[in-house]
Length: 181
Image (tube, rainbow, N blue to C red; front, top):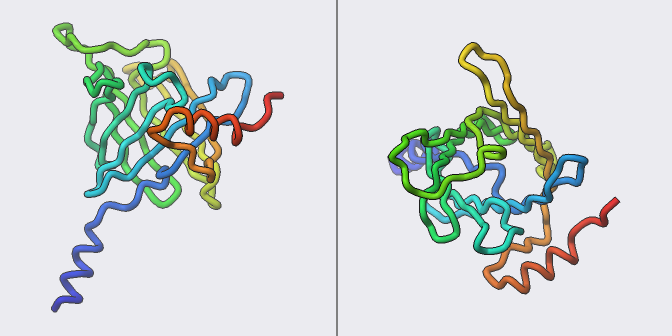
């Protein structure tokens, strides 16, 4: 009986987000050098540190479960912005995403730049070796036409630079960043 209960509990557990870890944006003509961190917080919660390589006061984060529900993106002070995201784990190499802007005119919190933050749906695909990631997001019109596409490629940073010590983080960034072309 105990085995049956454990098996039932395990089968209902949320699959692990394949993005857990640290990701450096690959250098391309359109890349901006993002450094994203997906940190397990426990109890199925994940903290997504968005563009952790920015100055601390410009950093954003998202605490979420990959359960299809929308969660607010927060600024460095923990204040919810006008943007929310959701994700659903499809399999060990695929995560679907949805991004939505709060269009309520009464919203008084921080607003993110709409050149970079737009309503979209997309997919994250992780390579079979787990070291490369491609994110494709599309903004669509009501009739389904694609208005805008954002595609980014990342490589997992095995060195794990993420640190609350800003100096240690910056030193690791310098040491592990590939040379510019």
